[in-house]
Image (cartoon, rainbow, N blue to C red):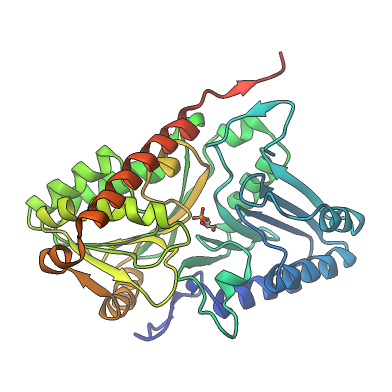
Length: 384
Ligand SMILES: O=P(O)(O)OC[C@H](O)CO
């Protein structure tokens, strides 16, 4: 397929998808075109206009005898109403929560189903950072939260569907197995499906980040919502910067979690001292978790660069090794950076009042303590 510079399609099998109408119109069309099986696994599904549109589309598919498996995280989707759950079940949709908060069997606050995956008929999948709610779609008065996904068409969707089924049906042995995850989509495009689930010894996304940052030669661009990297990733970034790799971080100027944002701000002086460039996105809430390195390696998914994603949650990313895809996405991120506010030592000196410094300090240490408590609280089984 010829590559158009302004297009988000570099191969008919792999498409960059943005939050907003782009993502949700694809999601609806995947559901409407499904023939026999759909899996949706998301952290957060809200009972709002966007959520209701997806529920209606699922009910319509169920009425055509399509088997539907919907699993939502018990914490992220805690408020998903009982009435709708019953309604879904009556329509023949298989529904369950992952790790409900009040379960007689397990209690492990940090291990959440944080991935955002949709897959249908083993032939089309959406994987990214986008949950199902108005804030990711946008409303007449509010822009969608900035985030991304990848649409994968063809044989690559098959192992993704198998993985989703294993999670829904609690087939633990299948979940622990490695899925077929490497696909040569075309001559110069290699795609990998990477998972993180520390409890099951899967660290593919965090290791992928560390390896790619360590091997970087020229340029690293990271979009990091809830950016609070652990020691290994911080060290890798520091070393890359020392090796004269240009590093640009796109971070939240406004966030739905102000304390986490303040905790990130606590790191600014240190990051600037490593010669890392910082850019804050202020046009909407930044929710993207993506990176491009050396115009070759791209990662897009649910994995935040923080310890909750590294050691707590179940995460899925798509890693794309392709110069064409990376150049296209890098060009897009350059446009985003052009709209950001650059943070420099000078701007920081003006804005970092004693009160701001204290707020950042307390937010950082409180967030780190909360992170440790929820991530490393032992996995307790209240049964045999
Ligand atoms: O956990 P994430 O990255 O899906 O983000 C969820 C939002 O913080 C919900 O407000």
